[in-house]
Length: 520
Image (cartoon, rainbow, N blue to C red; front, side):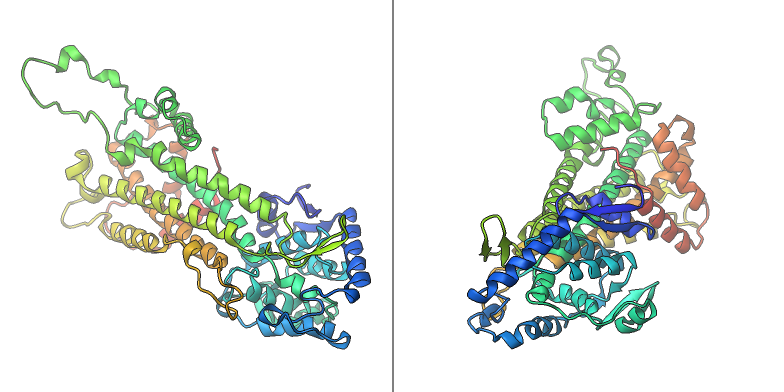
């Protein structure tokens, strides 16, 4: 891939490539010529052999009606009926970036040459992507078992010139946009093309791909606020030492500790355990010393708590990248052995599993941030900062009390959302789909959890910035945390007296969402 071109082969699509396409309207898709040959060969095999066999979805009904054999004159009509009957989703539209991502995933999986679609359909989907004609896809509808049937049906509906699309930020009738762009609004689905379009996990996988990137940004932000927290309390360096973590060598824990050591290498605020001198502090009598011998867990155990987050993110990347380069419809054409394979590659449990895994660990990250926020706002615990980081007259000004309520309530909502969709199966489709994945719902809940986490971490960052201003120790911060503080202050100056800061809060959250750079 160059900076503006992604060549799809069906086999090596990367999450970062999808992210680049949805982030930059100038990035476009090209199709690998060998992949197009594979698509054409699979279509020929389907046309030449299907008449002599009973093939699900080609010359049969769907789901519980698979025992009905369809006459030759109705085969293509069947595909159109499938799309129209399933394009019945309801609720708010899914974010346009997620739909565009799903379209790229669907195109890539069809390019593998196991689905029996035509090159014409492949190129039509490519045109929609490159022109950024994005179908309106409602949030409710898919149970994620025969794939994302309902939501993918809305994408297919636009491809045949019906339904609604977003084009240049406006919601319009598909046919109107296609006529405006001189694209033939009519596309007649060929045999099996309707089924190939909506059978599969492209929506949940497309959403999950972008959420992996967002989660990576979030985790990086969480590590940085953790580093700054350690500096503000003059934390002990041994809690992140390489030697300590070598005695419990979980990969995620070790990586987070290493990242913290790198971030804090230039800091002048951490302290060594050597500050406790035996000669100075130990006598024959029991007595209390003024220093904390150990920090609270939300400060001392950052690597141990964020390690599982990193490992769940690593797992999610691997599963999602496998999924977006897989054939996930049914039946599958195996040209090598010249057979049609009927199975369940469209089942979404893999995506639901990693989405829930990542969601659960990101809720823990949110809880970690909220507890540190509480530590810094409660001067009875931290014993060094003013109540609620109030930098002005106490009593008259309330400091960050209101923001703490926001962080607490937002964290609480995420804790409720942490319940896994993966185990929330409800049988449907006349009990044909008797164990379902709820994969799209899992990714949409993950989306909400990530949004919530950015809010909570931003509030924590505001409190930490107040702490830096109160301590007047900016110049002693590490290079990275100093930059973090400065960027915060560019948007939100130190809060001295109570004032309306709503617009600045939104800008600060957006900044952190868009400016996270991974250290992992």
